Image (cartoon, rainbow, N blue to C red; front, side, top):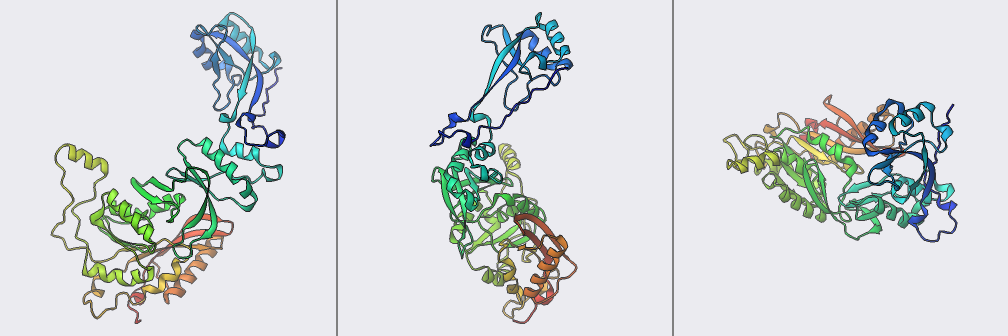
Amino acid sequence: MSRKLTLDLTPPDWTDVPTITVFDRKAFTKSFDILAVRAPVSKISTILRAPEMKGSLLDIPKVHSVDVDPQNPQSHRLVLLKAATKTEVPEKVVNFLETQTGSNELVPYTMTLDYDHWTAEEIIRAVMPRHLKNGAPSGFAITGHIAHVNLTDDYLSYRKLIGQIILDKNKAIRTVVNKLDSIHSVFRFFEMDLIAGEPDFVVEHSESDCTFTFDFREVYWNSRLHTEHARLVQLFNPDDVVADVFAGVGPFAVPSAKRGCAVFANDLNPNSTKYLKINVEKNGVDPFVRVSCEDGRDFIRSVFRRSFEDPFPALRGPRLSKTQERRIKKAGLYEPPTVTDAPPRRRISHVVMNLPDIAITFLDAFRGILVSDEVPGLREIYDVMPMIHCHCFTRELDPKKAEVDIRKRVERRLGASLTADFYLHWVRSVAPHKEMYCISFRLPSKVALASV
């Protein structure tokens, strides 16, 4: 009865190579003596597909099971077997190979794995001291050409090494940074440390068929929120007016405008609004986005009046995709979107508040937003109150307890109870005992019409 070959395919441990004083990629090499069968080129396909060979061919990821025969490079190939000795090759396999090659000879073959074979996660774990191998960094986020990691204190002394390995293993990455715990107290972006590659922090990032340009050091961007960006944008109708209180560089505003929405996009960070304007222009949605740079509370208190007094025009038909626009232009039929005789869009349908750490604290700014003797008719157009989409954090891991916690905080800030028209959407786990949610609710008319 044949035995099964067992190979240790993990990379050599750094701790097993005590002579290493600098990072030497050549130290990550492993060789294995196995067997191969020499076969004519014309027989290779038959051998690889034969049911008799099932389970006996070498099947290691990123290792070809066929190699050139150094003795007969023009006419023969070596088919690598999952065996180191002849006793590990089943008799039926030996008999089948003899019918195909005219010989039952098995030849020795040395398979070598090097640094390029293993993943960044495998190499990083191998270079860590034994007490840090479990829990070694295993993932990173990518924004444009930048990879960013969040290293705990235990791994900070190895940050340059970790960064270099990530750089080696990802050809599209040119810069690796470690996000630090400190957050800019006003503009809420993370401080970061360059740990490998070029000091180039201005990225071009694609998401939701849009292109975003920004300086990663100066603004807030989280690539892990791309699903949430898309989810919320899909809730908007093309003729809606959207107010984005904490717009950043436009992950909600720009794709919403591409749907045809009219968007008031605001951010307190002047660097965010600088790149937001660039992204609005680059994505061809200038007529549908108005950018402002002010405190979120001031923005909430003024945007309803702005939308009423200086409304966006109505849109003729749905927005076209880039592909549709190119096809129509090529046919000589393209006309830019124009307005119809329909009334302008005065009523705000949705308000986005994506600043989860403190967004709930801004909800009291909605009190009395529709009360104004100077703007007659403002209240009358809001037969339906806008939906508020407020992102937030909670320490409650149980969804029912999370709902109770978030709803309680929201109602306390609003000064009113929520109606039945609200729902809670789980976004992601941010850290142990820290969950991110988005609560969407119809603004109570009692709040919008409150005396201030």
